[in-house]
Image (cartoon, rainbow, N blue to C red; front, side, top):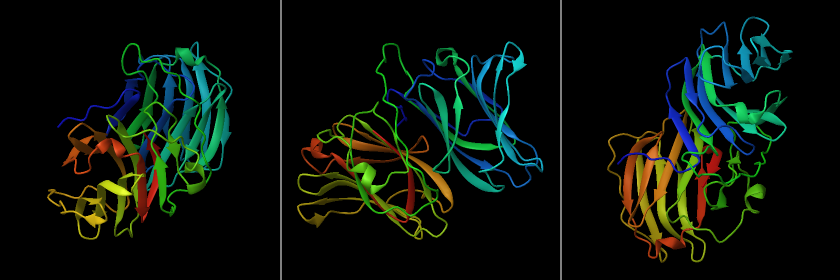
Length: 329
């Protein structure tokens, strides 16, 4: 069971640093780049993430994002064009901590790059170089990267659907969210960042999960015991797939709730990939006969449909001791 990402979604897992890779189809408004990483304890230098106009050394850089740990901790923002750096912008409010995981989101708008760090709006960098020139993403320095998820890219010729610019709430991560429902939308719509109940109620109804991907990024607290992700039918509250990581027990339970009754649990997994203090990247593909579930790009389990017709599934319910930072369908 190989992980094949849906159109418009370009994941990179555990890249070697320095990293340089293409952004398929280039950059456009509505795209987002979601980065999960870790700052080593012994960092006394810097790392940077570049939106570059090519993968070759010396290429122009449309946006240079550069946290510096040098005793004068700050984050530097700049561009590089015609072999010269532009006017430097910086912010001394350092959002990264040593020996800590971080979550970083770059949201591309028509006028600027919006930077969110750990669920909080952090900075806006106005475009100095046209977006259509940006072709690659580069990461260098003293940092470890768990995943890079590029959402809204053109994964194949002809994938031309324009994306609306997503909205984003303020707030800190990790946070303790309430239980909530997400009415599913087609892939290519805006991603939802750090979702909250009041934001989710306005999502368009009438779309099912059939033949689509569900993408959920989150963080397992160090004290987490259990949480669950349910794929439901809003018409009768049946649960087609109940994914229940029981962190303290080291298992992931799968089940269905149909006609008011829980079915037989499935528990057979070699390991529990949901670990305390770790981020996760969960992908669920709904096919004609089964759900295929992946974690961080690796196969996790296959679950045969028990709910018929499975096209009734139109709602995601997430509840428990977990921080959800990103939802996309």
